[in-house]
Length: 221
Image (tube, rainbow, N blue to C red; front, side):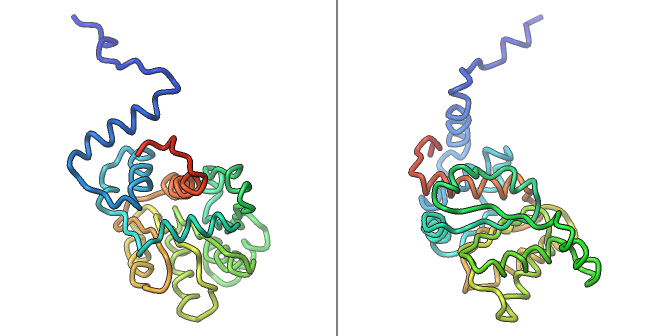
């Protein structure tokens, strides 16, 4: 009987990420990705091991370029979960003068959400908008956050975001909330159409944009 270890590809720890991107590029084959969006797509595949992101990630025109410029100019990031916040490279963001905010755990947000009968994530989007800063909204869990952002745009109470990352995962209102953002032609967005997404995907998109802003070519195109 052969040793199962014989099937293991031994790779030095420092080379694992590079080898992963080699495999991703190989398995994409002749698939041509938009060069502007390629890094973000490959990062999502790397994070999730799901090649569907090559098809379901939707980008508004020059969303990546616009978001990178905003980050370079000190844009901050609002997240819908602490998990998204935890996954973002705050050291790189701080280098550009930006911060990550998440208000979901704030007691006053919880109290207001209960009083109004809405989710804390929805209230958190409002708190973010009130900061008066250039903002990227990174939504990886709560479709209600995307719905509230759409409502605020309709109401005219949301300053134009630098970017909306809409990648909540799940079944209830997930697809519909993403389609609301996709219906807008007045806001930059990166949206994972369909049910797939997650906090890890939202964080990895933020990090891909930050690394592009840092001219970090370690990300293996």
